[in-house]
Image (cartoon, rainbow, N blue to C red; front, side, top):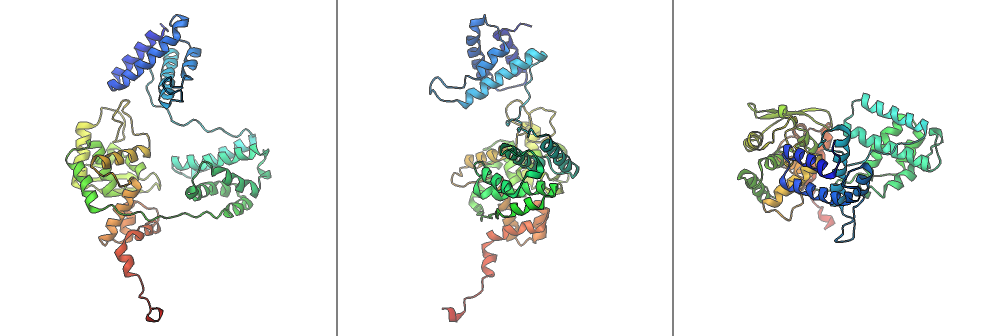
Length: 400
């Protein structure tokens, strides 16, 4: 194999073209290959892993003299492609995880405990995202103990629990600490350490349910018109309308598969990622039309089962719920709505509130939203101003 930067670069560019990458993306790769070739001139243009590692560390922009996230990504990605091509003889364009693997505890006892906790969560059928969250906090706590010189589970005490929670405040917002506590509690229950659970209760974190305002009818009509009249792509319109009309969670929209759409019945049937419960929802005509337009005309050719794919190559499923959030925001901005902060959570509240205003019973709303418990729907009562006013007691005349 010719291991010069020029030869390897040509192979990479050919693979990018065959995979239908955008020309602008290919040009960006060519730019990186050019700079790598200049660096390789000192060794007659030959590429080596050492040279690649040196190139990947060149993350400072010559123009600003500061760290460049773009250079970090472009150069690192190119080096990965070069290295894998030399090892395997093929250009691997598959997506790579954005986050690095979490560092594990070094104590054999802690490692065994963490493995047991992972197996227990898997056996109970917890959703993968839940396992990642619960397991990650358990891992962080065990590493926190090790940093404090504790390597035995019996030596863990209540003070370490409170100290661990305090250490999380650098990464977790104050309003989200209740979530950290709720996600950490199952691990302590698994270990049957009631003393540590008692210490966790001392944190006294509370979930704050803020009142999320409804979207004004004029704004909603503006967004729907933009989707209906083609101001945004069929994919983005379908995603936004699904969220706006059904109140689906972002993770369920991202995971929606082609086989989940029942075209003749105009429904979708899926299993919710958060609860594991099956859910069937009707599709309004406009949503169904945009879905059909995207699948028949706009969806790239791919073996991926998910409905919604990246517009840019590689044409794989959207990365995560953040992609859904970005798409919804883009649709609102394109439709001319600039002063409304939106996301699938606010659209979910909006869908529930409209059902409530229409006189729909709470158990029915709970079923439509796919809540595991009907009590979860009570939070939407806070936005029904008119019904809340009817509950206000008259002020006694003596009080006046």
